[in-house]
Image (cartoon, rainbow, N blue to C red; front, side, top):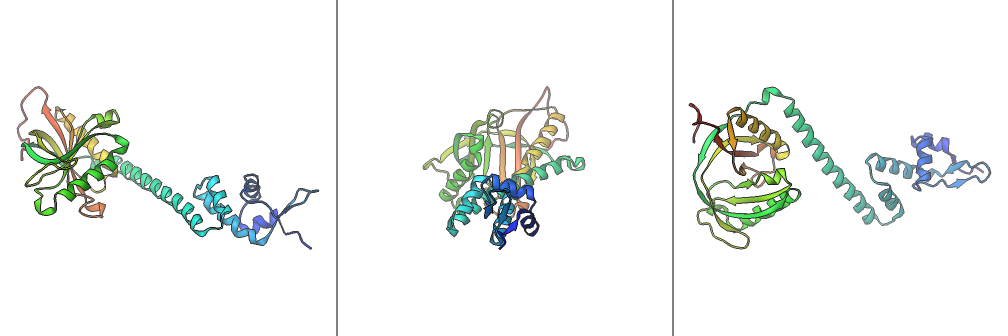
Length: 278
């Protein structure tokens, strides 16, 4: 009577190499059904083929060894599904980061797309409903979402007077933490909870529009910065963003339009003829 499939036969039918099967054995992922005490030959059962292929797929997805062992050890379908789902979410997040990096690199490698439509704009003082705080850069997105949700709840569409915006201190980028302000222009601003009535001072901005997803917004900022330097302008104060069309308006990132504004001043002279004011 046969003891089972030899490791060579098992490798053939499972499409896994003998080396891989030995590695799975050494890692405690797939024990042979029997090991001959005299020859040390490994033998496998036919019903272990599917298990070996599952391990191979999980390792292809970089599921950590500890999680693979936990998956194989549990008979609870819900627990198994939860472990796999958790890793799939991590993979999806990594894919999102990879896509963002690829998109940024493609834009950076397209010199013909480097030209921006930029205008210099005088923005008057405004009174807005705002939430302000000092925030760490790694917490910025979560803080932003929470603050905007609070502003949206306090001021329904009927009371709004333009798209929302934000102002972000340079230290947020240079030091990893800094002042963040998000605001909504509304007809009757009032304070409640974290919301304050804030007077935004007048400012001169170099303005351009970033189209689409925010994943590569840094590329547009870089090109705006190059334009500012080329125009002999200095930067003075926090960066401004206005969310003309954003995630709160549509889930289609291709339709998003974010206006970027850098507070600027002329280095050593008056504005040049032909500069735009609006």
